[in-house]
Length: 193
Image (cartoon, rainbow, N blue to C red; front, side, top):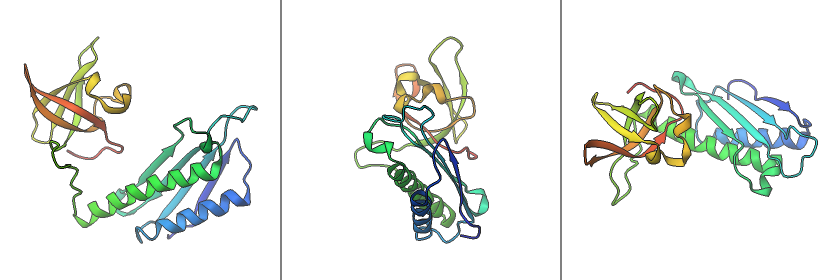
């Protein structure tokens, strides 16, 4: 790593135990890519006085060449073990490792095959419009075609996070009225399609 790790604390004590875990996890990232230029970690503790049952939020921003920054935010879930900051830090860095592997593969020109045997292949597209007053819209494919999608086809309840321009992965299938999308997945960072 070219720059020292930056750690910010909010609503929690900056303990040496937490700093050591972040340093250990950041060092582990270098096994997956030697092209990391910097790593910024924000640790946000529970915002209420009653800390029992509330989760830590971990934000990680890892800078890599060619504008391939890796962004991770981990705060979801209701598992009691996530109340502990070290568990939340490990989970966030595990997610970062997966993203770094994907970015490194992309930088080398290797494309990850997302097709699972027996399942249709996913396509990459961008949301172009929503129909006013309805829970549906259209995705533009890489070839410039528009494919219909409905709220129910969006995986993980992410429909409300979609906006015009959002990059998505989807499975195209033939419906009664033409091409439609199923298994629509929001992709993290926008890329050119």
